[in-house]
Amino acid sequence: PLGTLHGRASPMQAGLRLLCPRRLPAVAATRRLGCRISSARSLPRRFASSSSSAEDRGAPKAAAAPQAGTLLPPFLDECLRGVGQVIFLNSPASGALTLAALVYGDPWLGALAAAGTASATATARVAGLDAAAISAGLYGYNGCLVGCAFAVFLGLPAGSPAAAAAAVGGAALTAPLAAALKPLCGGVPQWTWAFNTIALASLAVIRPLAGAPPADPAAALSAVEWVLSPLAGVAQIFVVGDAVSGAMILGATALYSPACAVAAAYGSAVGAGTGYLLGAPAAEIATGLWGFNPSLTALAVSVFYVPSAGAAALATGGAVATAAVFGGAKGAVAASLGIPIATLPFCAVASGCHLLSLANLPGLVLAAAPHSPEKNVAAG
Image (cartoon, rainbow, N blue to C red; front, side, top):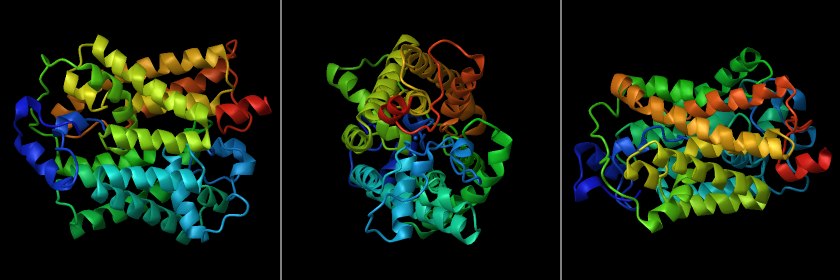
């Protein structure tokens, strides 16, 4: 991402540079704490449910099947949608642009993201899981995130066969796990629980953040870093701390839904601001670590709720709460387990936001067929 602290690299930083040979100097492992290894879309992730009904998946019926007129082979279409579904985009075009953003930020990470998505999707096909969910990419997005996480945190060099095998194998496990989690989640979307379970359980074995040095709390953010921080936060959903990649991902999101792009950028900015108020190290804010979980929460609210002043307030409050949970838990998790916190704050707070619909609060109405703010308001 934005370089090493104090102008010199720690051993952990040197290891991360091996994973990102083409890009800006790799950030210390602590900067990626909780990367979204991240970390949401037309068929919002109630994702990967075993039921084909829109209500069970939290997805619109019309979005369950591939878009009419697509010229892509079915499997490729499903995989590209799987990449997009990490940020709730049920579109092969948006998925392809998102994957291009990952390749720009870190070619090896982009390759493992693609391999992980393909592995999870193929596993779902072989296992005979819900065809509509497979077509919408709902069995691929967790695998995509596993590939992103393993590219960064396994500590293996770019091109490592062992890293590729781990990503493919770990991603494959997310498909049956997602199907098993569906009934356990009840009416709440699955978010990225399957990814968190597989990735963090695997990383707990090697403890990549054990002994990682803390970021410098005295450093200050420049005006440019403040501007770029929300973009880096969006990129960190995929464990890429690069502002240009974040801008490209927002472009892919805007192609699908301009309002979703606004929600993603807004949530990331709120997260960065919350981190600043809580005294977070400047390096963590600049590289987007405080933005990716809040970005996902704000995006999830925009996808599942009908647009309203109440929904906007929930997106803001949810983003603040997500950043607070991230700040309170990341250090403890890294110190005790030696692993990043990944998208656990998003999963926890987004679940709470979704459950608020049961309180019948004024202005908070779940969309009948969650898709995007534009389509949710039109349907309402």
